[in-house]
Length: 274
View 1 (tube, rainbow, N blue to C red):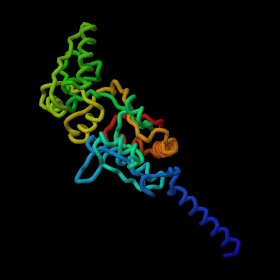
View 2 (cartoon, one colour):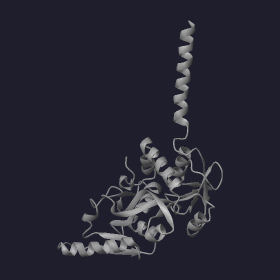
View 3 (spheres, rainbow, N blue to C red):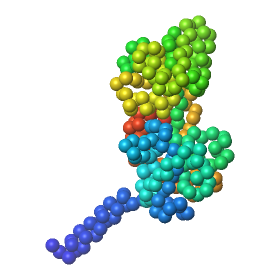
View 4 (cartoon, rainbow, N blue to C red):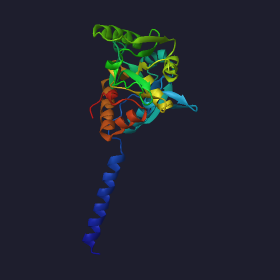
């Protein structure tokens, strides 16, 4: 082999190695002033499946996996900090954590205390028994059906709106069957005491994961006007920008939709551009 060929192959190998390293290196710049050096410390209240919960003594869920992906993009170690939900914003404001990654609903009251990077959209779902024996195609098809709801929940008010709608269309109104808990409402559908269950998008996702052979959703998500966001301290534009960049890379890689499907969330939950 000539010296020229040896040099060429050496340079080519180095170039290829450089490309390889560039794919594994952090693509987004980590922010300064972290709560713990080399770590992305985030608060989470692990009581809200499928987003964050404990299984076999370990934190798991959509947000936990998302936190790992974000940390990886920033070249940091994911360090979730499990705390009661009411303690999340005080922990953030006290700089004990860098951000809140806990399926936090974005509303005006919270937006006055923290800044948000939105990442998911949720609403309500029509759930039916597996196989859909009544042939229900969605919310528009519930007239004359028995709808199970949790007493006092937002889904109860939406079901009562359907009573008024069906009456206005000269159709038989649905019968609203209320139960004290979401679990009792789901059981009513399971044992045939109801034809339809109205529940939140997260609640439906849990049912699909835990008992996939028992329930299914019918039709699109409705009233999908609630956004979830990762919270940062007011005015922390550096961290917010880093999160937006990392999330953009996670979307581009396909991991965003992979997580949505893995946790049985509907495609309508995808808030970020694909």
